[in-house]
Figure 1 (cartoon, helix red, strand yellow):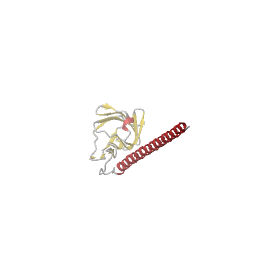
Figure 2: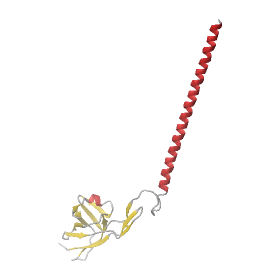
Figure 3: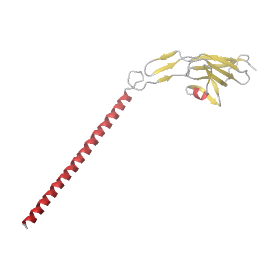
Figure 4: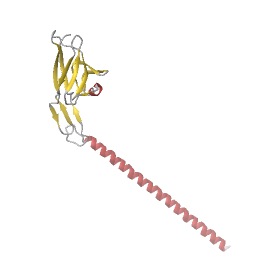
Amino acid sequence: MRTFSKRCVSLAYHEMENEKDSTHVEFLSFMMTETVNKIWNRLVLLFVTCIALFQITCKSDGGGIGPCVHIYEEPILHIEAVRNIQSGTYLRTIVLSNITIDSIKQDPFFLIAESRSVAVLDSSFVCNPPCSFGTQTGRYTFKVSASGCKDTIITCYPKYNINKGGCPSSSNGGLRISIDLKSN
């Protein structure tokens, strides 16, 4: 009987030790998970803080760090007025078509991104002077049409007079023209 009892005590003792070990392993596993979670949370917080600092220090005067962009403060070509030279009247609406820049045909849809008082109609601009469009320098050629006037081809070389470097950089001071049309 003694041997049996010693065995029972011995088995009971080993079971307790195994339970201790598994509890200890569970505790260590829990602590490791908590540590990993804390490290992960701190890394996320550090990342968010860096992004916030990046955004805060991006100044409009170029003195900060941040994305460097170019700003067009106005379109490059301004049609200030269109006049019928026989009658002397200023026209309220004109149509610009066959627009090319450096002999390359342009889709008006892409020129309208930076424009004023201009609407796209098929492959033409409907313009209510004063109107303006475009940002690309070069040789602009286009046909001007208006009710009661002969179609006229205009060629001009717009460029920006004011170009500021830095970050952000900008362009301003486009070409301003007036157009005279003849009656039909």
